[in-house]
Length: 162
Image 1 (cartoon, rainbow, N blue to C red):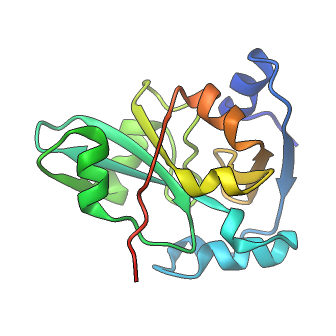
Image 2: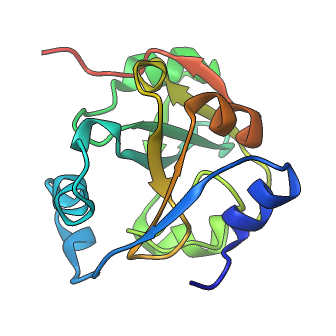
């Protein structure tokens, strides 16, 4: 497996992780269910697969959110976390230019620029969580505290209840 930017960052910080490959057959195109399919292929609990959501504030600041793929993001909680009046998802067509990643392969680590990052506090429930390695079909398994450190992230509540 070739090293991704996310893996090189973890290596540089001497953070332990495990890289996992799985067959990517386009499930990233689905609005819902992609993480469950990824988890099934890796034989893991889908609750510990954390998706990366890239948004922009009303001032066009790019902010990054990570949360369990089983949950939807609560936009009010996301706004409160980053102190914005509005947050809107970055369009898939703009994702590559802003982050260096494509939809379905967006990692919270190793983006083109350093963006403020917020990780849902449910991550702390798990010994290890899975994030995109930066390519479709590749995941990184690491301790939640190590992701917080590597991403210089803030833990907060982002889950939409109900």
